[in-house]
Image 1 (cartoon, protein in one colour):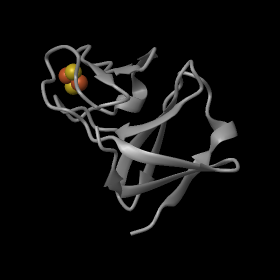
Image 2 (cartoon, helix red, strand yellow):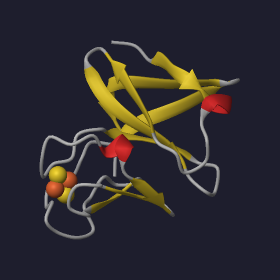
Image 3 (tube, protein in one colour):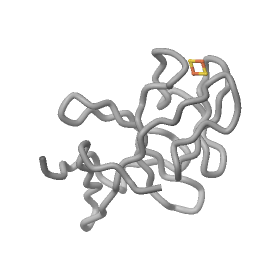
Length: 108
Ligand code: FES
Protein backbone atom coordinates (compact mmCIF):
# COMPACT_ATOMS: atom_id res chain seq x y z
CA UNK A 1 0.00 0.00 0.00
CA UNK A 2 1.08 3.55 -0.51
CA UNK A 3 0.15 6.89 0.89
CA UNK A 4 -2.88 8.58 -0.62
CA UNK A 5 -3.69 12.26 -0.85
CA UNK A 6 -6.36 12.53 1.83
CA UNK A 7 -7.09 16.24 1.39
CA UNK A 8 -5.40 19.58 1.03
CA UNK A 9 -3.91 21.06 4.20
CA UNK A 10 -5.48 24.37 3.23
CA UNK A 11 -8.93 22.72 3.16
CA UNK A 12 -8.73 21.90 6.86
CA UNK A 13 -10.35 24.30 9.27
CA UNK A 14 -8.82 24.47 12.67
CA UNK A 15 -10.54 22.21 15.20
CA UNK A 16 -13.04 20.98 12.57
CA UNK A 17 -12.59 17.27 11.81
CA UNK A 18 -12.75 16.09 8.22
CA UNK A 19 -13.86 12.53 7.50
CA UNK A 20 -12.14 10.77 4.62
CA UNK A 21 -12.15 7.19 3.44
CA UNK A 22 -8.94 5.65 2.12
CA UNK A 23 -8.97 2.05 0.85
CA UNK A 24 -12.23 1.57 2.76
CA UNK A 25 -10.75 2.86 6.02
CA UNK A 26 -12.61 5.79 7.59
CA UNK A 27 -10.23 8.36 9.06
CA UNK A 28 -10.84 11.60 10.93
CA UNK A 29 -8.31 14.29 10.04
CA UNK A 30 -7.92 17.16 12.47
CA UNK A 31 -5.86 20.33 12.40
CA UNK A 32 -5.50 21.30 16.04
CA UNK A 33 -5.15 24.78 17.47
CA UNK A 34 -1.34 24.47 17.29
CA UNK A 35 -1.64 23.85 13.54
CA UNK A 36 -0.61 20.20 13.78
CA UNK A 37 -2.48 17.76 11.57
CA UNK A 38 -3.58 14.42 13.03
CA UNK A 39 -5.29 11.37 11.55
CA UNK A 40 -7.14 8.88 13.75
CA UNK A 41 -9.64 6.12 13.17
CA UNK A 42 -13.04 7.67 12.59
CA UNK A 43 -15.04 4.99 14.39
CA UNK A 44 -15.45 5.33 18.14
CA UNK A 45 -14.40 2.19 19.99
CA UNK A 46 -17.49 2.41 22.20
CA UNK A 47 -20.07 2.39 19.42
CA UNK A 48 -20.57 2.75 15.71
CA UNK A 49 -20.26 6.52 15.78
CA UNK A 50 -18.22 8.82 13.54
CA UNK A 51 -15.67 10.69 15.64
CA UNK A 52 -15.33 13.34 12.94
CA UNK A 53 -18.78 14.54 14.03
CA UNK A 54 -17.38 15.16 17.50
CA UNK A 55 -15.66 18.08 19.15
CA UNK A 56 -11.99 19.05 19.14
CA UNK A 57 -10.46 20.50 22.26
CA UNK A 58 -6.71 20.96 22.35
CA UNK A 59 -5.21 17.69 21.17
CA UNK A 60 -8.32 15.63 21.88
CA UNK A 61 -11.41 14.63 19.92
CA UNK A 62 -14.59 14.01 21.88
CA UNK A 63 -17.20 11.52 20.76
CA UNK A 64 -20.54 13.30 20.53
CA UNK A 65 -22.53 10.23 21.61
CA UNK A 66 -21.32 9.59 25.17
CA UNK A 67 -18.45 11.99 25.68
CA UNK A 68 -15.30 9.85 25.58
CA UNK A 69 -12.36 12.02 24.58
CA UNK A 70 -9.60 10.46 22.48
CA UNK A 71 -6.04 11.72 22.32
CA UNK A 72 -5.19 12.81 18.78
CA UNK A 73 -1.57 11.95 19.59
CA UNK A 74 -1.95 8.40 20.94
CA UNK A 75 -5.54 7.42 20.13
CA UNK A 76 -6.10 6.50 23.77
CA UNK A 77 -9.47 7.30 25.35
CA UNK A 78 -9.02 9.68 28.26
CA UNK A 79 -12.33 8.88 29.94
CA UNK A 80 -15.06 6.28 29.93
CA UNK A 81 -17.20 4.82 28.52
CA UNK A 82 -14.71 4.01 25.72
CA UNK A 83 -11.70 2.09 27.01
CA UNK A 84 -10.00 0.89 23.82
CA UNK A 85 -7.84 3.17 21.67
CA UNK A 86 -8.52 4.18 18.10
CA UNK A 87 -5.73 3.78 15.55
CA UNK A 88 -3.50 6.75 14.80
CA UNK A 89 -2.06 7.10 11.31
CA UNK A 90 1.19 8.61 10.10
CA UNK A 91 0.59 11.93 8.33
CA UNK A 92 3.01 13.34 5.79
CA UNK A 93 2.68 16.76 4.25
CA UNK A 94 3.91 17.43 0.71
CA UNK A 95 3.25 21.00 -0.29
CA UNK A 96 -0.48 21.33 0.36
CA UNK A 97 -1.14 17.61 0.16
CA UNK A 98 -1.98 15.66 3.30
CA UNK A 99 -0.72 12.14 2.63
CA UNK A 100 -1.85 9.13 4.63
CA UNK A 101 -1.28 5.41 4.18
CA UNK A 102 -4.17 3.67 5.96
CA UNK A 103 -1.94 0.64 6.58
CA UNK A 104 0.75 2.61 8.43
CA UNK A 105 0.05 3.33 12.08
CA UNK A 106 1.95 5.88 14.09
CA UNK A 107 4.16 4.44 16.79
CA UNK A 108 2.95 5.76 20.10
S1 FES B 1 -20.23 5.83 21.01
FE1 FES B 1 -18.48 7.05 21.44
S2 FES B 1 -18.47 7.25 23.60
FE2 FES B 1 -20.19 6.00 23.18
